[in-house]
Length: 343
Image 1 (cartoon, rainbow, N blue to C red):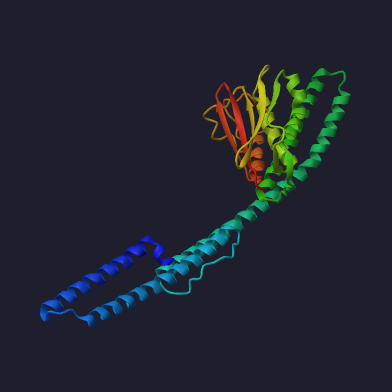
Image 2 (cartoon, one colour):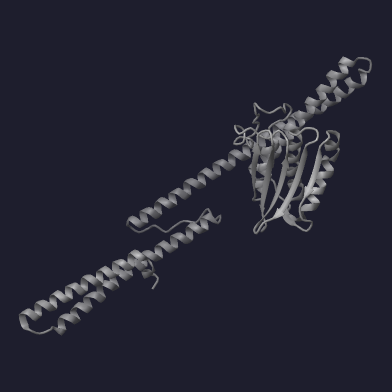
């Protein structure tokens, strides 16, 4: 019987049976003392009473168990995404007060989720509008800057200022693009086009993308992982996330340092790691590096925007994965992305 699977209920039934047996023994003892005989009628009456108590208790607890099972079913449905799932709580009693409280909690959570979604949508639209509005003057400034450079052949000072201006304009364009991308990811408006991708092929594409920079800066890119490992992912977005990690590693390494791209299969996941033997991350900063616009007071990189790592984190989480950082100050860093193997 399912009801008796509950240890506390089983103990209750045993206690009732023990009390019944004690009562029966006392009653039969009293009859024996008075009449020097056992009473069959008393035994039958006691058995009938025991059966009646058991039946009432069993029926009551079975109803309670059914109500709890219905509640668990509705809670599981809510957790699975059915935000309209509710527990029936039309009857009186403490258990149904609890069910009503759970329903109220679900309604509050729905309201918070709706509000958060509206705020994300508003933020996405606002940043999108701002970005589009900024693109036109930025394009004009780039044209003016190009004209200025072409007209400043005889003035080294003007050419230098124009070159610095171009760098800052490029940083502004990158900032706007990254802000818009992160906001879209936050709002859930990015649709990932996933497919089975060869991880080795993805890493080779990254190596080609950064090979020129690594060669110019005297750094080495090393790939290490199995050839026949596949991951269900969006190729472009995963390259964007891993590319930000490689760029971050190159930004914090010096001439002669090495950046390693490693990947491996685990029982239920695939790990991709970007490791370097550069300057590392100060312990004070390790907790904050995935925050947007965070700039370390220990970092020598003054050109970064503080969006590369948060963007990588948002992309990894959009794939249902996680990203972790491990570092020793002055010895290097390792960023590990872990993705589930099942879609």
